[in-house]
Length: 149
Image (cartoon, rainbow, N blue to C red; front, side, top):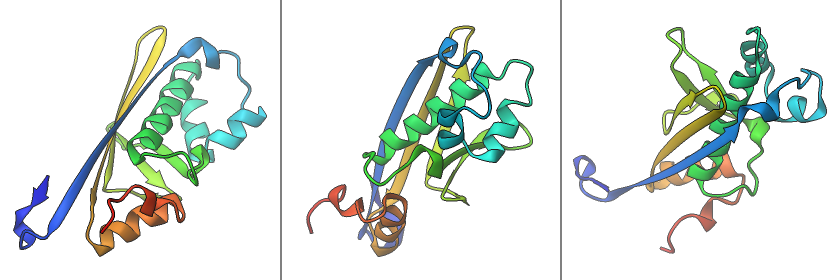
């Protein structure tokens, strides 16, 4: 997709990631479990464990993180703990990377009784600022994602 409004020289990349997970994998998991502490931020844990049954919320948040990683295009240099899935006042999810809200990553979350699913879309400009943004997320691995210039 090309953004013609900026003199036709800026290209945009759209990448999509999806993840689905069984909620039962999160049943009975304690808040202080090493996996939980390594994967979730304190704000995510407050949200998930604020429910009487945190399992669907843990699973949905985890699926969101995995979908974001897939939409970015690599796991190298990107830890799940650096990706934060939070909710706005109306419940709509949004993504923070390294503590900064991202306007280039959108995530949609849902769950049923047994499964949690997430879809993430990453839209990035391949202008210099777009490259810097991606590089910041992926810590020196971003150039592997970009076409040779």
